[in-house]
Image (tube, rainbow, N blue to C red; front, top):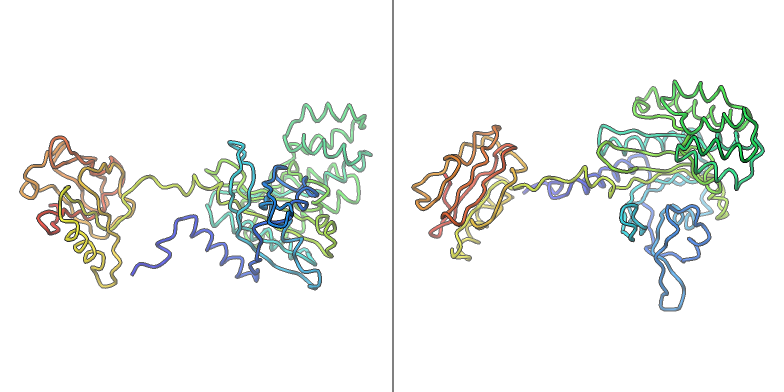
Length: 436
């Protein structure tokens, strides 16, 4: 029989791969609720990607919500008695407003959360898992890292309050240098300090080139501590080969009410939007009365649909064609026997009527596939166009020809690209015949 993993879609295989990865690092799956009390999200709106929440009244009149976020639920329900650290992972769906059509969507997430005594090693472990999660999707990716303490320290030194910081954070995230400088002038920030803050919008690059630039504008203990932590992380991850696709980008900023240290975002070539996000959220832990810190990330498989999408293809080992009007019972028996052929059995057999249009190339090559030309003797009333051959020898490109039973019922054998790789049989007169 075929291995069970052959039955999974690429997205399903990715999920199982990531679960295996997280468990190999000692992370346990966290049991999640589908619903939470609506008040949880009302009280923590600024932590959410969107303030829109799907709410409903349950049987006893309580206002509930389909969860728009996983981290809030984990922090709320995580044990307060556990000492040391809790290593958790999840694979859940959340319900948010889509960025594209602004309608509610069910969005898949998988990620990890490290709660408790989060030290330098723990932060590096979370970053390593983020890197390896992106690697599991595609070799062409980038993980961008920043530190909330650096921007916060620069703004504290300039005497800015929380409301002013939030406004500036938004402009920095947008990399809107012109508006950012205008707003700093409006806030009467000293020129030197204003220029340092404005530089955050474009202060990015490799760790080696960006850390010295950031050190040149560090003005306080908080800013220096942030850079020291980033340098220590780089010193640990670089020898492990984990920094080749990692960049510093100080324009990455989250809400100061929740995040206080490392923040991260991941991007993958071919994915239209951010595929991974996370950071350290000690402030969120405090809001729920939990001791210790917290750090984690989420990967969004739904953002990778374009990478996983396959062209319409004949994904089978054998293609069986039949004429309309053939005996369905005999056809079913013949196909059942064909599925169990071979030492291990488990052939994938695609059964199609000759009136169907199959224009795509087959998905998987079959070893030692022979050329399969059309034999007019087997199909005496065929109307063959564009040449005599359906398939070229194994590994060659198909000719993109078509054939049919009559002039008005034609069947496009394959497209003009891709290997011709599917054994093709014709069911007629109660038996299967090779198309030769």
